[in-house]
Image (cartoon, rainbow, N blue to C red; front, top):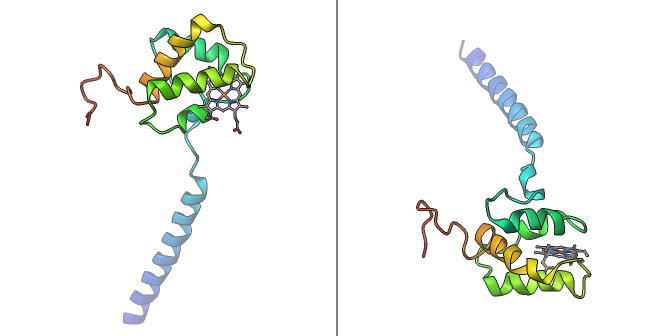
Length: 117
Ligand code: HEC
């Protein structure tokens, strides 16, 4: 009687371990990191047009959330020169605005649920 109970517990544990490791193997990274986050800001469309030819949005989404407007501006300008992105100078401020509000220090600006420090 006791032995049977122990055996079934062991069997259950083995089954559990097998299921959970199978689940762990099935975990996938979210797809959205490769795409620019949709936004009503005009820079969103410009980012889609100008910022996907050489790399995905992965580089943008992995930048620290504390990145300032100045940082984003320097980054976008660096994409133009020396990297060679065919960006129009007049489009840069809108793209920077979108980036800093979507991925950087001004993230959640105007969203009441966002806690600011
Ligand atoms: C002409 C090709 C090209 C275009 C277009 C381009 N990039 Fe890049 N980007 C690069 C290269 C090259 C790197 C550096 C990759 C590396 O270091 O491995 C890079 C890296 C980055 C990084 C990582 C941080 C860093 O400073 O290296 C960010 C953020 C980034 N790009 C954002 C953008 C944004 C925003 C746009 C649109 C305005 C854009 N890129 C358009 C070529 C480009």
